[in-house]
Length: 90
Image (cartoon, rainbow, N blue to C red):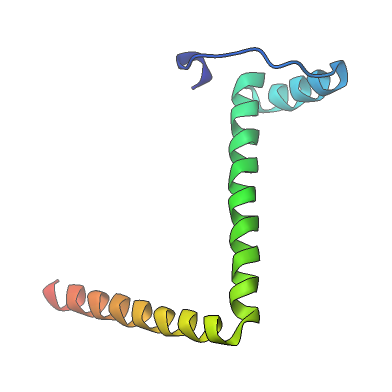
């Protein structure tokens, strides 16, 4: 994957390079591919952390929690209706 994309140089300590080399070798892939995966994991983890923090804020506020639960009920009802409709068409 990385070989088809434009690249740049990243400076890391020798220790980090050794760790990356070992990890990549275990999986039979390049350091570049490993770094791509690690960066994507970090990006997703950051999104999940922000989402969890926001959900905590919503649940801590009774009014926001009430609005959230109402929206969730509407979404679940719409999904159930769509599934029921699809089942009748099949």
